[in-house]
Length: 379
Image (cartoon, helix red, strand yellow):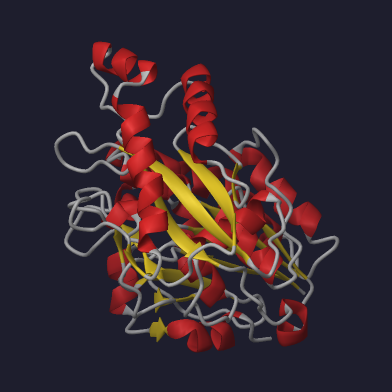
């Protein structure tokens, strides 16, 4: 028996809105829903600032309490962390007008120039900047500060009032101060102003912490499991608990995802695929592309897997959204979100469609990592 788990992060939307699941063309998901357990799940009910790092840990059956985003992303990107190392994430944000935690990214050449200058200004014998992307980077900070509260960029409303606070907070604020001074007159920002783009005003550190020590997943679940994701934090959680977590193939198409999942089942009894594409579109406020994405996932990912079930393959399929992301606010919303669990040996009568409203009408709700673990990894 094989199990495929598909996690579409941020795909769901708050109640009372026209959601992508409602407007996308989903004949396969709807057919699956009619013979599956469908309901709502909230992996991390108590989190104020929710992200894929916490929900992934909860879905694997681990308590997300105490987990930090920075070290998980560092692990997922490849570098190891010494016991005394602190991992941190650094995001370029715009402070022009309202805080914009996700400004239009610079092109490849401008990004390389920015990060060259920022790295030179910030790096010390104890602080190294790694794994640079256009608007984010990761830092490994030997004996760095731990007891500092840093508001995630997505939760910022007033940067001056929400500066890092706590023990040794001045060391973390130094990163912000140096970056603001450097970026204020930078050639890249002058060029962005000429193009009508928001300036990149500060480098915002957050998610500081040490690498977690999680019990080995295979010993807890008794299952050989492989996890596929392009997300550093997701792969970091997997690496922390000893899961095989290959990097998703560069440039893979939706049509190739189903083949990749099936190929992984030759080496594992359970394969998990996590995608952040819907979350990215929600942060961009693009409702039309989100609905198109749902339709494409149904056609190119779900349909081939469901066809295998139709040929008599002993395949269980679980589909879920691990958290919601509002198109209106472009922020994560911690609320119950829909799940679908098809079990080949226990088909059951389900709702007509797989949407937030149909899932809520079933009356099934699951909360917390312990409840999710018992449900998700049951035989």
